[in-house]
Length: 104
Image (tube, rainbow, N blue to C red; front, top):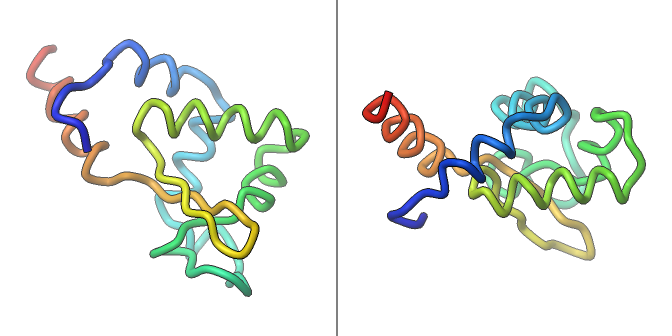
């Protein structure tokens, strides 16, 4: 986790209903997704294909949304057996929330 935040980039990443949905779904992956063959839902994250399906968008669009969240520091990608899995970066999210509350 970086010590400095790009507040504008992070807030812009969250200013989209599909990306907010991803953040909500990843908050409790065990409740929102069935078990995966490759990769643990909690430690590795959720397969991008499943996130695409939940967002209801085409793969290129899902990839772009996920990349925006990665670039903002909100989620962490993990490559495994040709797939990319995503999980929330809870340490970053917690530190970001603290920073925002101090600034507001």
